[in-house]
Length: 183
Ligand SMILES: Nc1ncnc2c1ncn2[C@@H]1O[C@H](COP(=O)(O)OP(=O)(O)OP(=O)(O)O)[C@@H](O)[C@H]1O
Ligand SMILES: Nc1nc2c(ncn2[C@@H]2O[C@H](COP(=O)(O)O)[C@@H](O)[C@H]2O)c(=O)[nH]1
Image (cartoon, rainbow, N blue to C red):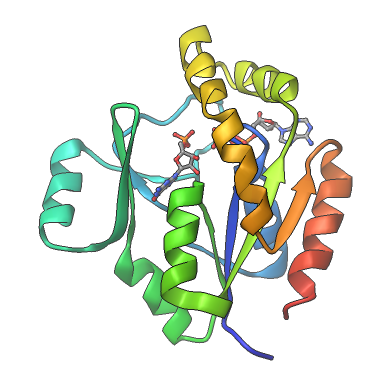
């Protein structure tokens, strides 16, 4: 077995990347590497395990110390992966997963080469709208995400696996097969 591998869940916003990543990661014992973000957690009623939610001051301090592997500003919020959170499990020989946009996925591919397996998850634009609205996002925020759709969807051509997330059980099975083909 080569590796350890870095599985990057990427794709169109609202396609179900986080749901799928956490379900498969837990099932296969792959270590989650959460980004830090300055955005507020969305209140869904369930404990939010998507990010490390930190203040802007904390983010700036970590950034000033050079602790981020990469950062991004999306809308008014900042996002970034702490280098040690990725490197530590890899040094222990453990596979990891992250949920990232195409920019960060490309950077990881450049830095880590064949260790990086990008899983591109997508749904059609109408379904994105329905799913984001069902998460309680406001009309304006949903519109902002949808504006990115044409740009996001072309990234599938560069990814190792491309999967449409229509029916969740079927998607999970396809992702399981895709990941296990590398292990
Ligand atoms: N196959 C599916 N069928 C129906 N609903 C789904 C499916 N997969 C995910 N969802 C729901 O769609 C919504 C968006 O999923 P999720 O938050 O995982 O997407 P995401 O791509 O991580 O979104 P974001 O762009 O906010 O990062 C959630 O409410 C989730 O429960
Ligand atoms: N470049 C980076 N993009 C990231 C990071 N963490 C998450 N993301 C992506 O940002 C958007 C918005 O996320 P949301 O949860 O606020 O809807 C989405 O595409 C994420 O995948 C990161 O560290 N760097």
